Length: 258
Length: 288
Image 1 (cartoon, each protein chain N blue to C red):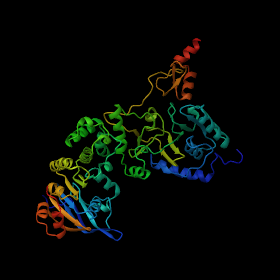
Image 2 (image 1 turned 90 degrees about the vertical axis):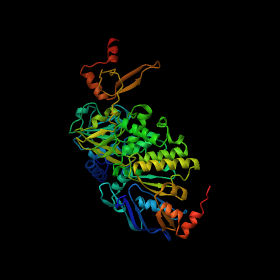
Image 3 (image 1 turned 135 degrees about the vertical axis):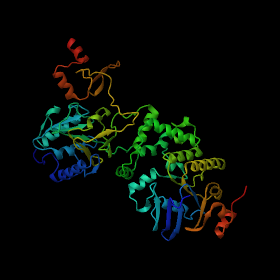
Image 4 (image 1 turned 90 degrees about the horizontal axis):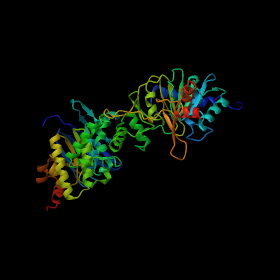
């Protein structure tokens, strides 16, 4: 691990009217690292993700991103075209509901190829080849490349969304409850898939989840949030095995052990 | 004509449209909003084209109006008569004699010159409208030159049909920057847009947009490296003039499956026949 962070946020604050969603939040993310943001509903997890990815402007504070050449960019001061370029090349976003990200009236191959074509790929054969390659990597049968996403199951849709996001080899992926709407057995397979892909491609991930189990399985480090504040942060095993803050203790003790 | 300003529109309106035209020429392929007026013909019949024509027409101009290549259809005849009466300009059906050509869905076969202006009637100026329903979003996509979605459509066509199945209104990239709808001209006419010496103006009356391609501008039809753009043409010679390089209309001539392919550009066909070219149908007539 290098000293240089990929993404840094300092003193992020944002409130919805009287309701504080983020209070003085600091985040650091190093290349190739998986960072889990956990907390109960309404603790500001998703708001934090949206602010980090530049989709939502904070009231105060700044988010810095280091590009491959080592230059720092203030995400919220970037011109819109540059941010858009970042979002469709270096960054990726995986939603809880794959239907938000996928084009449901476009075939699986078209969905995977869109980011390539947006980057200027103009060779049909090679776009298709990469689409097949990625469908195979996320364990979707290559023969389904010309099928519509509406014929896919929930787990397949989520894997298709991951293929679509990772096809451009992003360095940083934001995931918002990627396993939230899936049943447990499908969840386990998907988590396994995400872990192996992310490790192999050395992608940094900010993962928002309310599921401690998901965080323990995937994340290197963890941030625990409560009412917009970071109450505890550290290595995943350390935080979960020896929680210091009362809220974290409550959170860990409330998990059912099967 | 008494009681009307020259070319129907008042001078303030023409001024407003000319300003929009100047902006459109300055940013090739970019859609410029304008205050489209009520015209004495219904939307979809060329209200945009007719306003642009009224704004660029001078007393010395010679006007030609074509509708799907033909000079003698209702739309062409009535717009031509409209300007003959309200502006008193000369009208013609000969492409070479015209200085302003208003067209619906075709570009004349004859190569146009740099002292002519061609005005297109446009029903839908937004090339992305079938793919992205929000105009706010399509405007953002134009601003950021984010045209991956259009290629997704082409990809889908090849994946499903083995080829790009757009036969008219084939999207083009103007000056390597703006994605543009060429109006519903056949894809066959798309190559003529590229580096045309003529000023090309596009008017969409209902959608209240004007755009333009200045002379000699690069206009590329979208395609893939391994699936290049192909203009589509019916594989027949013209039945009347025998032309093998013009765009053809298919005409049903009887109820026993009889078909006749003729040039869609009536002026081109007539001139070829006047020059002595005869097609198979013409030979039959001569034999009878």
